[in-house]
Amino acid sequence: MTRRTKIAAALAFLGILHGLAIFAGFLAPYPYAEQHREFPYAPPTRIHFRHLRPFVYGWAEGREDTTRSYPIQFLVHGRLFGVQEPSVIFLLGADAYGRDLFSRLLYGGRVSLLTGLLAAFLSLGLGLALGTVAGFHGGWLDQILMRGGELVMALPWLYLLLAVRAFLPLHITTVQAFFLLIIIIGGVGWVRPARLIRGVVLSARERGFVLAARGFGASDAYLIRRHVLPLTLGVVLTQATVLIPQYILAEVALSFLGLGVSEPVPSWGNMLAEAQQYHALVAHGWMLAPGLAIIPVLLGYLLLADTLLESRGQ
Image 1 (tube, helix red, strand yellow):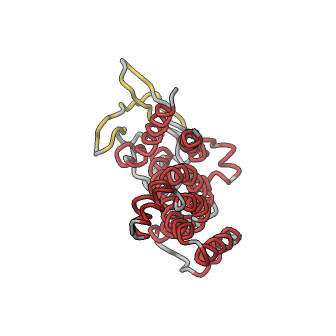
Image 2 (cartoon, helix red, strand yellow):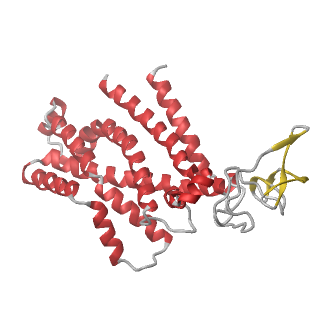
């Protein structure tokens, strides 16, 4: 398999996974906050077929009632599939409030994946700007930026986040919590890409075509835009494939600890928080579904990162 094929396969795989989250409103059979209190911790619904037509049985006293069947309906109420009440369809089971875990998994992917993407965009934007300035101009400006970056890396950011959260109002909106996560995660991670980009810029500013353009009177802004920044593209793309999965895991960890998006809005982190209860973990294994959903996302990004690194090495 060629490198182009590997990159195309990884991008297609990641595109499918992100597409599932983007179109959660269509693919999920229920809204993320819809509760079915009569079905707490319901197990995954079994799909049956009769004459190639899928259907589910009703529920009575915590188990299937084979005397009542309900066909699975497609393209109803603006959603891909569903069943008629009073029956329910829980492809991955339900949580303590009877909320469909499959629906919440798709909606939660929006928060977790988007946090990773936006935080990586923020880190790379800061790293590109500061690394380019430090590498191109050098001198005291380079020293200040790089020493400041080392200070940022040395700070205990988890404790800092706890302190910031303590000074905020007790109840903050979901949007505020979402952007707080992005700012904290993205603001911490700019140092590594900045140092790598600085190295590329230090090499690029001494190249012959850059010195020739400077000799013809080109301004610093022109040199950076026309000759230096294009050379950093490979580093930026490679760092993006490394940082995005790291930041997705960071969001999951922070939300798991209660520092991210709060209920009822789902994220993979706060959904996993329900599984930390011993009885839920032992008796209802499907509560670990958000943790399993992270694995293919990470593998897709790691495959893409490895392929890009191979391309750069050659």
